[in-house]
Structures are given as structure tokens and as C-alpha cells.
Image (cartoon, rainbow, N blue to C red; front, side, top):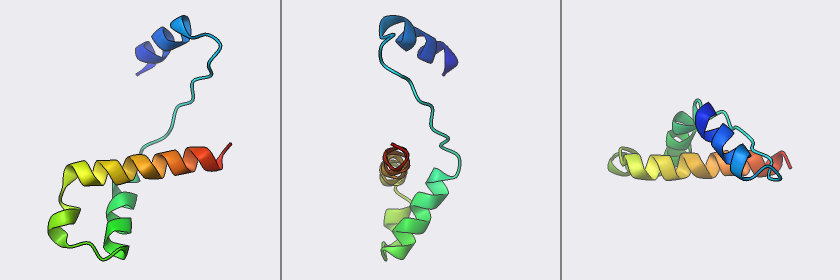
Length: 65
């Protein structure tokens, strides 16, 4: 990740790069899915869990702006 960040900073020095802590976002996504009443089969869909986790990370980032 750090190598990728350095490459991005090299090519785009005017754009700030922010790192986001993604620990526990899958758990948060699964909890949200449970609260939404999603069935167990849907909660086991890794792609859907990842999509919801990414949404949570984006929401947290936008709250910090």
C-alpha cells in the first residue's frame, strides 16, 4: 500500500492522499445487513459485504471533511 501511495504522490503531487482504516468494516457491514433484515444467504455474499463496507468507509471519510 505504501509503495502505491508513493507512486500516486509522485504522479499527482497536488492531490492529497488519505488512508482509511478499514478494520472492522466488514463486521460493520454485516451488522448493517442484519439490521436491514437481509437474509443469511445475502449476508454471506462477500461481494455485497465488500460493497457495503466500502460505502461505510466512504461515509466515514465524507463525515470527516
